[in-house]
Image 1 (tube, rainbow, N blue to C red):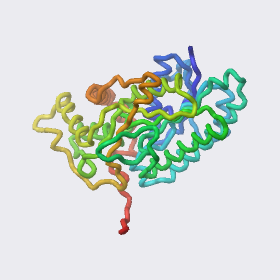
Image 2 (cartoon, one colour):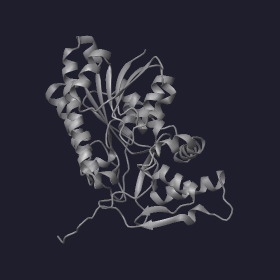
Image 3 (cartoon, rainbow, N blue to C red):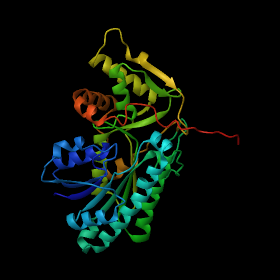
Length: 358
């Protein structure tokens, strides 16, 4: 059955993959709202240009009048909220944008969603959902053992994760106070096609292809749980279809890797796929000063999502990474167009950090 969904941040990395999948493969009607900041890219949505089931609107989620007009015009069955400033390093250099979009923008969107929900006839209201896409970074850092569960206390370390934690709390409050049928997903590190090349995997692919040094923070042993973006999109679809309003679902790839192991794996794939005589790309690894507040380990327990809703990741890290590297090799024009001069792989998140003794 065709659904109509308002998708915020649908020209970004995860949102763009979600839009393409649900228009082209699942046959849903998608209204994409995106501000088109540096990470929003209309090239990502090129396959659905002029598609009868896709409408693109450029705008800010904090523009209450615009959001209200979209809700009234298109009468969506759900709002899927991806729109966010999402890069830790950028949040260190410029936290104000993160406060505006992730907190104020989410608040404004919730207000409009509440008014829309309260105007719906009973049958449509009972089926309506507001799904907020969040991150495992709200939980802070883990030691060598243990996993993040939905009950893990929040302990954000960066301006980015603090702003996402705040938005999660707002979403829960709008459910408990106003009865808005909300859902929250907290995901681990995503990777795959269409990711802006400031993030670890696409950045390392681009630098390794260029034969440039591969900057690795600290000792490179920070651990992340990696989730292929299509598996994440499937999880969101599952939560929309089966999730219980008011509940949170953690989404993980069951693929813990150190940052150094990820970089080495990329180097090995490229040495095989794009060999350069006399170059072993692992030799390009360069250890640099760690970023402030760098969490040591993230790992997700996704058993609630798996056991109650039946979702499982379909890609292993090995299979997903090979697909990802191949996509970047096959889509050089997309990479060139997204790197429009505003970001050329330079380090961010290295603002002056003054430490004082406890």
